[in-house]
Figure 1: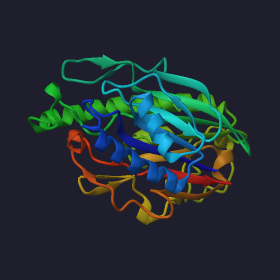
Figure 2 (figure 1 turned 135 degrees about the vertical axis):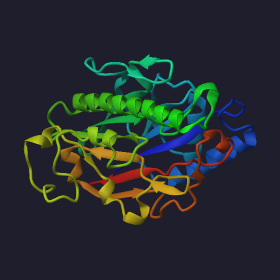
Figure 3 (figure 1 turned 180 degrees about the horizontal axis):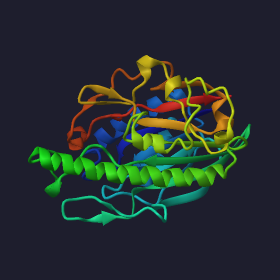
Length: 316
């Protein structure tokens, strides 16, 4: 089976403030998205930036075949949310924005505003595969692209840029901590026997501190001497499959000309030994046609496809 994650970039019906301007742009976007999904044929796909249910139904109608879907009820201020597309039936286990009880609210602006929940929901589901039950959680953590007072995308000075960068980092860190708490629930202390995957748009790279929070107990990462050894941490640990992606494909987005892998797949001990392939993009190729994006996401309104590549693994 193939398990993946993909940020669909503002999948809205035409005419809204963030979606395509007209039906022609909408149809072009759907066709380009459908072609990519058809290219790597996922069994279970976590998705981000889904707007209306109808837009997702229109996309899957173009992909064809039988699909089961689950969408979070918790959208952000733009109306985007996470979800799952699956070839097998889904049971929703959790749909939450809650921070862990002991984690204090975090500051998000110069006025001292604080938040005590994630900006977008974390959705967890369970499905049944040939290898047994599979539990999965999908996320879309706080973006590194900064928005300043008045809806500006450019800072007035370096002090403002630094402060709002810190606010975004506070929030992304808190959200990563909340996602790790959800992963703990899915693993239930038994990752050696449970198939669990945590995936999504982490908005940070593999070695970022926010991403490291999700791994659980340190040690045994793929590519290290400890990977083949077992230890007591295996029951709670998650493995990031990024090192298994061919180096030339190890990116899912191009930010101001720089390739970065911010969409990631993490798997439990029972799953990591059965990963036979990890890729980005559709099918056997990378995504050379990915656009380079800048600080203003509005510049891509109406563009076809997505500014992200899917990231996926094949599991035996």
